[in-house]
Image (cartoon, rainbow, N blue to C red; front, top):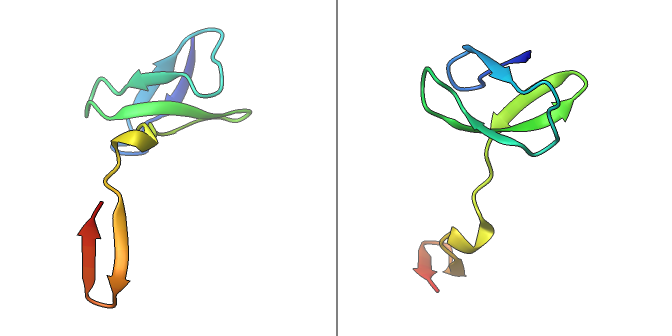
Length: 68
């Protein structure tokens, strides 16, 4: 097992013996959804949500944002 650090709470997180870039896991301390962002050195970042789940904003003026 390899160990990386949770970017949210700083807790060591165990990673499988054969980690792959983009693998997702959950911090057992703070429950943050994480993904492997680097293999050497082993590093975790917050998991990226599916772009289709994001709210789309249409910029129409300096103070006006509307959902599409």
